[in-house]
Length: 305
Image 1 (tube, one colour):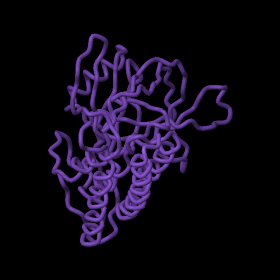
Image 2 (spheres, helix red, strand yellow):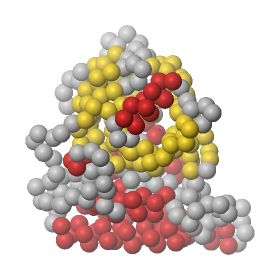
Image 3 (cartoon, one colour):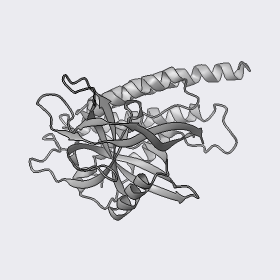
């Protein structure tokens, strides 16, 4: 399974961050100047399902550190990412996260056009994902983190700008409209399809040290296990919802165009509130990936570079 390390560095911009998921009403603004940038460095509680859904009128909320990324870096539940943090502000964010049960929020800044903004950049805070720090490696310069997306969250408001962003978030989960039987059947189909994709993908040429587990299978194995997180259970999606995100992972050796398409699919998946629809979309994506990997294997067998 290939790995990508996201190196968090400095790029000075002065955004106006809007703590909204949509533009259905006038959003509040939060002025915040921060050095931010991400460089891509190549490298290596299960809950019951009900027809009424899982949103609660008095949903709980948490105050957590927030780490922003660009729009092409959406993180979905079940996905893993490796981060290299080395600036003082991000190391401070790490220390607070460790005090908050290894949790923080990964979200993206979506540039938006605002009239009479005086030339100041404006952004909407979108696609929040609660993440768990699974491992930490202290380095001579900074720290290397492995994080896992847990579930979607909505940023209600920003509470702090310096030395890092901090805000109040609440869970943002699916409304389950289909019967448990229908969803269970569809989940089984997705699991079987991901297993088939994994068997094909591990046949692609890869370094000898590469594990015999792809990104998709890694996400699936996590998604189908019962979770025991030290946070309110409302922040943990159902097993079916977790599995519905497992297919939205990169395939080994993906071209840039394929990665861009995957980002589009991830955004669609994050916007959906229907578990069954996302499971259907997952199956379509898996079928496309199986065809793509099969074609690459055919080329590989012919010795064509």
